[in-house]
Length: 606
Ligand SMILES: Cc1cc2nc3c(=O)[nH]c(=O)nc-3n(C[C@H](O)[C@H](O)[C@H](O)COP(=O)(O)OP(=O)(O)OC[C@H]3O[C@@H](n4cnc5c(N)ncnc54)[C@H](O)[C@@H]3O)c2cc1C
Image (cartoon, protein in one colour):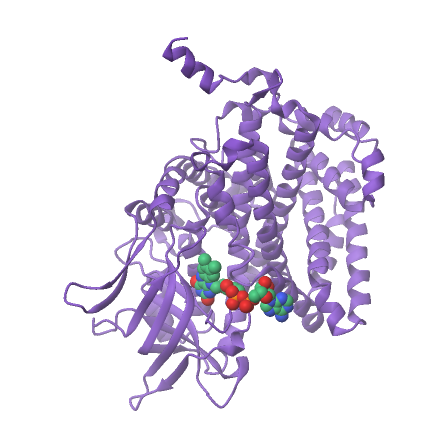
């Protein structure tokens, strides 16, 4: 056998035509346009964006989808292998505490910031050329970027949080000084932000904060202490918490501060980076330990209110974090779907096998549901910002921890599943999937662990009755459904809402221990009910617009698994019959019309 024959054998040219999947056209999740290949994202956005916005948004989404799927994704693999380095001292031994990042990281970060990922609605040029971007659209932008590299989202998420803090809690002087820099469209004017609360005493127990803030004789605040985790650590500004009143323990004695790395007179502030963390994933973004040696700081708002400001900020950063996690879910599905549609085994492509088809279909259903929940939450934020209505704010406040918890857990499952579905190659760095898994694992941890987010939801329920407007809106949405396929799903959503209401009412009478123990299960119930309602509304829009029934079928599947009530035994005996047969419809090129929809229901025995 000659060498070229050997090479041909090694690559085992795959029988692309054998698969019915539209993903067979792509070799992997690289060198694709993440927007063009995502029919669900496009159709979902149509349900959330006003028609004129949907029309102009297509162009920037396509532009960003192309960059993310090519250059941003390519660079991400490069800097993942290199990582940043700490330059603690200069040649004369002075503490400079700077971070040397890979040039590809800097290029990508500046590119997405220039694009307006944070500052779109503050950038006169973007506003003049396109218009204001509502939150569902901003979320879609970040969803595309996260598919290239979730680590890139870290500085974006933090900047979103800083915007909330500056707009809502800072006095006018501080706001006018810093906000334009945080949202700046040009690199020359831009300031980046780190948001740092975690100390060695714990990230969840913020009340254990030991960093102290003291006002000097001139009334300037100075911070002394250590922070154990700080991401985007080389940033120009650090938003942090410190104890303003050492006599007041816990969260009550905390103030929120902004600490500049360079003081107003141009001299370096007394902030050091002790070391960078040697992390499992999100290698591009530098994370390390920060030391404040009497660092000059500006108080944000009222002293003693730091924890409540942080709560509001976290609600937003949790939402943006969920968008990033959903990006990993989508990229994982893309990697699995492209590979399995082309990989030959036993004389066919592996996506022919019933178990493989069912696995891919459930991944698709779970991603669709989580994206619907995300967009519904983004729409709640949009409504809250537009009309300031308390109910919309409370809906956003209640849903943000739910979607953070859900996507954080799911993105790890998805990345793991992608590796498994690809097989041995999925375990190899050049296939990109090991990075997805390493990166995904941060999302159930930072910005509040999964447990902490579930407890935060329970707090929103018990202290503010946040579930009421959430469920009321679900019921209103179901009542407004116009098409039969959507109403079928709507019925299942109402069932889920009723279940969740009953569980919450029953748990409210239980012991505190029991409530805390069950908080994650409550988050699952709330997330499922809202996701299914949102899917019903989106399916309704699809069917009404152009008789596209794909989302209606995916929502049916989601409802089937959710409300099917199978035991392990009954699932093994007669569960989910017909699901693999839907693969050509759900993963195929052709739209799914009313006839296909009826065929799908028949296949499912519905
Ligand atoms: C790569 C990386 C980057 C980070 N970047 C930043 C950053 O930029 N800024 C920042 O401030 N922090 C950052 N963090 C820290 C992160 O936010 C914390 O790790 C996280 O909040 C959890 O805190 P902890 O690690 O101290 O765990 P702990 O708070 O000690 O929690 C340990 C475990 O106990 C559980 N737990 C705690 N309390 C409860 C409870 N009441 N009920 C049930 N379970 C509970 C937690 O869920 C967790 O499983 C980063 C962390 C990492 C790994």
